[in-house]
Image: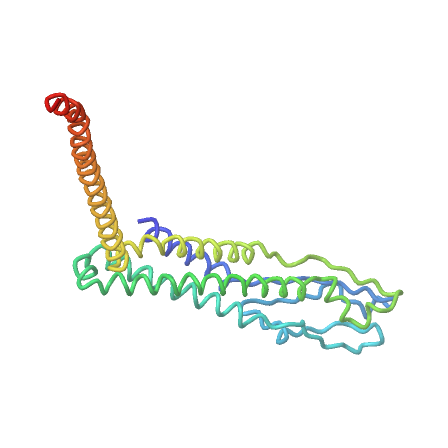
Amino acid sequence: MCMVIFAPLFAIFAFATCGGYSGGLRLSVDCVNKTESNLSIDIAFAYPFRLHQVTFEVPTCEGKERQKLALIGDSSSSAEFFVTVAVFAFLYSLAATVVYIFFQNKYRENNRGPLIDFIITVVFSFLWLVGSSAWAKGLSDVKVATDPKEVLLLMSACKQPANKCTAVHSPVMSSLNTSVVFGFLNFILWAGNIWFVFKETGWHSSGQRYLSDSMEKHSSSYNQGGYNQESYGSSGGYNQQASLGPSSDEFGQQPSGPASFTNQI
């Protein structure tokens, strides 16, 4: 039930916070010659974070010449993979919810439904782990590439001590951080559901039957061993008493020898 409720929601939060992101930063270049300055350089970027395609122009503080630059890095592969996993996980969760509610009998028919569900759950658990880890690394690269201090180092005007280069504001990454958190929450949710789906499969029931059969065989063999020990003990005691009987009779017949001797005399 938890899987049915939380899996679609967590998947929505994961791909919405990542796929719907757009941000930017603002820089300021104050040249010695104020007419060449630009105090509001806006740099915007968004999903899928192909930063090397984000270009902007900055003053060189050497006349009216402008310098065209681009951000460094490309995190599109990890971001798109993360969003793709989230979208497909959302669609499968909706389909599984419909099957659980309206087609429960067909789901359990021939044990095919639980087996398919188990395999897909394992696959999505692995994909969530890989996708979340890759996107966490990609987000780290995005933060470094869009750090205003790193961007200022790309400008030739900022390498001259006479010019003043400052960051007006930095990009807000809170939603991207949230996407990584929901990515790992999805992994925990799907991985934790593996056991509950496995219990619905025939593999779990066959394993339970095998365990119960082996325990019954073990208990029956133990009972047979105890019965043989008891019968052995009783027979041994009986034979021991039987062997003691004749020795007592022989002991009683010992005086008969001298008595017969006196009769002969």
